[in-house]
Length: 335
Image (tube, rainbow, N blue to C red; front, side, top):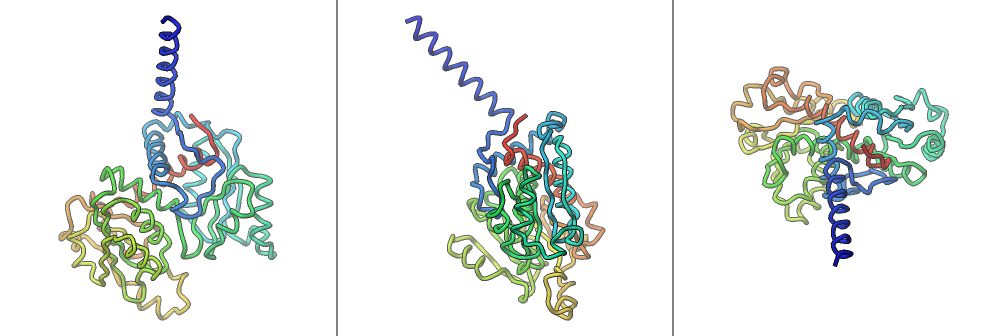
């Protein structure tokens, strides 16, 4: 009897220890994994990343040296401000260090070195790499030739999964969850990798509804339209932002991307298709969330910035926190 009581007490203490550990530490089994597109992580894995990011927001000082001795390589073949700097800030705030390049002219890619060779070389120096590239599929090529985790920071018009994590965390912090929300995506839905990634991720949650607002030339790609149709998701396509605004819980604005156009005349004709201003917002819900992956050009007027419904700068800051959580998870480090 005594032996049984002792055994029971040991089980209780072990259960208490693990429960306490789950409360305060990241329990993701993502060590050594790559993040190439949003579907690489399960909903449960994404939710735990959001929980870890929220713990970092609540107590950033506790994470100041968890990545001490770790090196992040930033490989940016395409210009970036927020994504590159937020990843660098994330690693530095975790106590790690950063190496890399911010454009191809400062790398051996300018001499003709292949992407496969570059990532093999980087694997010799760093513990983890984040890469942005102009070509679709480049992140997968890098992952297939890498001995370290690779994070896709945008591959052409394909995917931008860490921006999606940023977007979802921002919505979750404000709305609580993703169920029964109506999300409007406005602007360049054809080439917008942030749009493609966000729609793919949100489609996994129940009862999300989409209103796609764009010129006919910049509608969502057919493969994405068919994916939504197959899953039974409610999708409405329109060219009229003003008509859609009153229905929206979240408005995701995007810029028309000059760098994706082959014809300058087409860009000039479409670039000012949608401009959100304070006057138009009078018709919107009082708890609307306005998001934008940034940079903006003129698709959101400056008079919107002081509106409490404007979340795009908070969204940018949240990107740093969720990337801190991601780096920890892929490196397998804990507080």
